[in-house]
Amino acid sequence: MPKTSPNPRKPTVALLIESSRSYGREICLGAAEYAHQHGEWNFVLQEHDLRTGVPEWLKTWKGDGILCRIYDKKLAAALAKAKCPVVDTYGQSRNPSIPFLDTDAAATAEMAARFFVNATFKNFAFCGFPGLWFSDERSKAFVTAIKKYGSDVHVYQPPKSWSSPDVARREALHPVGSKALQKWITDLPRGTAILACNDIRAQQLIKVAASCQRKIPDDLAVMGVDDDEMICELTTPRLSSIKPDARNLGYTGARWLHLLMQGKTLPYHNLLIPPLHITERASTDIIASDDELFTIAVRYIRKHVQEGIDVNKVITHTQRSRSSLESRFKKHLGRSIKEEITRARIARAVILLRDTTMTQQEIADASGFATNSHFSRIFKQNQGLTPGQLRAKHRKP
View (cartoon, helix red, strand yellow):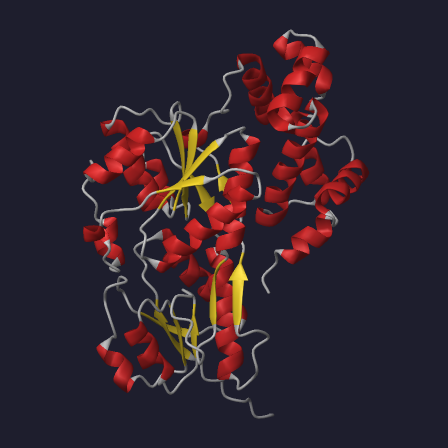
């Protein structure tokens, strides 16, 4: 009988990633998915938060690789000296000897800006934790994105006493907030769309708004980032949030780590991954217009876009003349009713292409297009690439 070769040794990989939030858990799950597809790995999960510091075991670590989220220079320096490959999925330290991946702040900000502008908001604000790098990145990106639409952003600046770089301390705000934050919320004009740096900050804003008698979303619309389902569902009203592609980030980080463990060269030293989509919930469920007829029409389109509605059905629903309704769409959105229906269909199709395994025909049907060929043609005209090309673009690198 021929000799059977022994089973290859499974790599031992440390996950130095906080698992208290969905973002970190999704990164870990992405890494696990890659490992399952490539012979299984032995994972060592270091339970910690962003204040843990340099773990003691790192000095004597004899594993094959480390997938981590580097949150300070001290940890970055320690990991740079590690005797095994290291890949960072946080992007703060950007140590030249450690490759990193992160969520694309510019793409995140543009997604929020486009959503708010399409909801006809004219006033915009950003509230984060100034001094924390990820918050500052998203703040600058949102200001840049909104300026493209010809508007400015009211950016919250906290008292100097709240300038700590400690993430956990900055997030541990009293439920009613500081007086400075209460004043900032109170002074915002009615109809302001606020992007928060993350879901925790957004949840705080909604609590502060309630203490200041500001109604969400009637007075102010609030959107978070990370789409942590527990946080979003425990917020009243439920929180809309941008969903990052954290599982893809973990999968790609594991792939990079595998290449390094094999002594191979990485395709890039760093990579920014765009978010998936916005999960709409009650905190942004408003059209920022005092024009009741226009609001009724837009809500109807959003609710029934997958049903193959056309301009005539929108007009019938509002019981107004076409010319009257068209003039309102041109005034508030700068486009026709038909163009808004198409935009809403394409937006829905993009989410389904990115997030599901539905066939192109199924997506065409679910997005309100009469035929697959019509869907492909309109999609290419609007996005500059075919549905298949967009789906391929968002597959794991």
